[in-house]
Length: 358
Image (tube, rainbow, N blue to C red):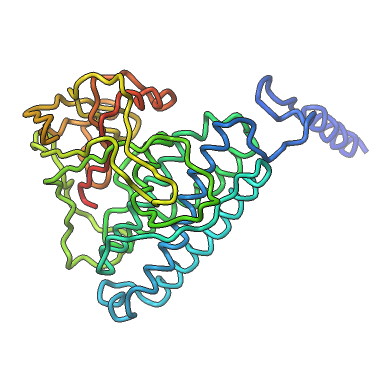
């Protein structure tokens, strides 16, 4: 009897000890039902960029499978099971695009799929291109996700972008690249992600909403080392040395503002802040940091210059580059951190990828 009483007391004590939730938190009280709709123009414009990204990826995965015979895939180690996985990624993008369009429908801003142009001619090039597309698609969402006014739609987008991050890693594996070369994935602004995306849009329905972010002039590293050993086949991981080392001189070329880009139906042109100072630095957007290097040998008429690959640091440890990072030519060294990174937009002369391993 005493044992039973003690057991009952312990159970009762455990029930009474159920902890109250900690103070704080947003939207956790249950007092209001979540509304899955944009709450601002910022939310809507960000999701319009997002749906364009998802439609591109949907078409891209289908295009890769349709562009090459099975033997071309087999030659680089992509068997039938992996090809089915690429098809499944396309199906994932169907869901992502529908989710974003459902949210945009509440404010009358839905988009339809465009037609696209792709730069690849081989399976290996196609896989590397898909890794690049999913990389900046992922980074673009990370950049604006914490700033959305609507937390409910941020939650849905978070649950889609985690899938996209897995797509990026999977594509790196299929291409024979080292799949996870960084401790942290960087975030980009909507303007940066849109600047990378829009050149691959060939034509779009005129009814599609216009993207309300600038397209930065394109920046190219003309001597980037993006080539891997072509004998390396698809694998969970392939170990290879960092492709880009500190101290290497990089040759840069960029475009002028005012150039037409993307679908002609919507008349997008490259643009930059008219109050910019002269080009002076290169911002390397790498993990949690923006590292600046001086711009040298500047020729403003030819729009060329050089810079020295800096020594990236993360918590006191040097970090080489073994994949894609992003760079911008700026008019000054703008002190930014991941949360206020959008302050860099007004200082960008040109923006683009730095391929080092892919």
